[in-house]
Image 1: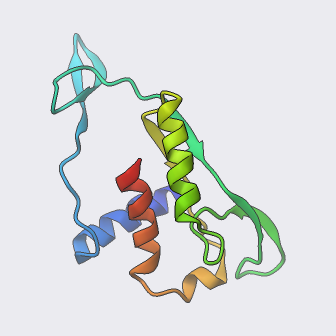
Image 2: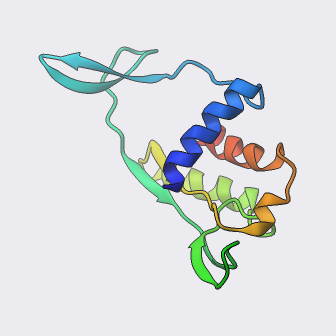
Length: 128
């Protein structure tokens, strides 16, 4: 559910001018009736080799109680240096794709300025 929200959020941010969306470098084409990723710059096939970038923490959701959930971008927990180091390690290990999760449950996230949270997400997307 939250994954679809981030896609919607990024599309909304682009429409509102919060972030600029460049043409995708990796696209899909059909070769002999089979879908295939390819790199638009080189024309070569692209094989995604992915990893999850996950940070977990105990949170107090808006609906009460506590739960352990994704906290990668949460206020007070997000560490841009750690994110950069982890992404660099993934790249050195041969990964070229990363999946992140956002928290839809943390009340503190609702209180941060609109430009802060997308900036954190943009930092991950631009360095991955």
